[in-house]
Length: 468
Image (cartoon, rainbow, N blue to C red; front, side, top):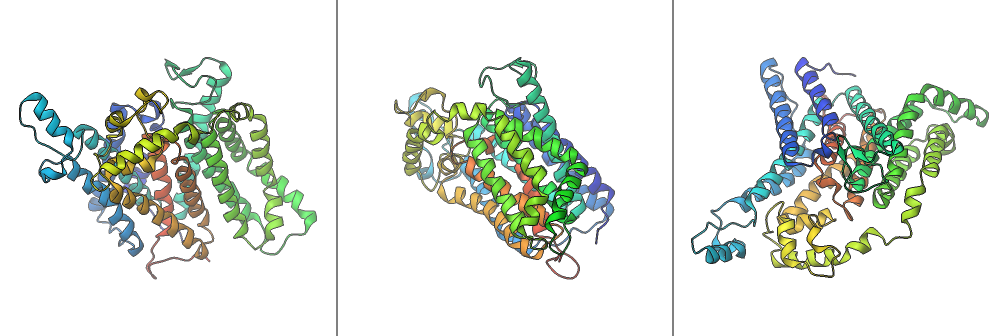
């Protein structure tokens, strides 16, 4: 049964959608001012949600017991980053750079764990903003209809940025907004600088679009097995009714392929296999053959797009793999982690720390600002325990969504999209830093907020709601 939403929730929800639409525009929000602005707006949305509940005297539903552990784990890196920044920690914990700087300057300095206090606070601000987006999305999309609208709007936003990127690509102007490109010529990057980062963003939009059309197909399938003669007519009906959705998928898939990002495209394809596999294998009403046939328009659009736009990616297959290019940097990062495995060097301090460890085994050693492996970078900066707590918090929410699928029918797609999105960003984070781009981290937090709203849904009858 659909639950009415309050006016305050409606306002916050539409504010969240505007924020989601804005985040990719200023170069993926990957500049100091746009990072701070995104975090500020995220916090204001969360504050607006709280004020709205106070003014309307609306009681928030009790915290689902399954959320307690992920939230507690997510709090670990937040608290630890503040500890790293503080000056009241034992001197034996402080990074040696503070003693060296004091000796060089000939004046006492307050030591800290972090080597760059400003970078640690800035990165902590970003993480708080993503958590605010996650919580706001979770609080405003408990209604399955609202969750569906949220994913549909996100897919349309993604299609808009894909259309812009394709228009710039085929015009041959090599620009990003009002700026001339300074890298990644001949690749679709939309409003992002890095093609790998945009590939992740396009992939997230594609997962939402494909997931929604798969759900539409599932709902149109009869409960009894279909006769084979009726399947072509059903596929044609779905294609005519979902023409706009297929256009959205076409735009996103084409833009994704024309990025030429091997890791981004590969991670998205694996995530699509996961999404399609879960969606089709779990639906036994019309059988797997019926589901595949009904999904024929979608499959044909994806295959045709990947074939037509495969040029850039095929051209790059002769090059070394992304992981092979970065193995020396990973080795140096592991050595740096061994220096301070528990304390870390300070959240957001990879660039400074890596500069002290790099050598000529790394290509262009002076230009490395990211580890190109989010897991290693987090372990270096936060320390292994806090980094593992952050990863485990995300994994537990995805695992809960996967488990909840057995008790869901109408809202299963929101869980499937969240799981496949986690596969996408999780795999890509092994060889790149897309999740460290604010617009992408905000998009993923938004999707996982929608997923968590359905995975941890509560009703007056009990802690969990079954759709079956």
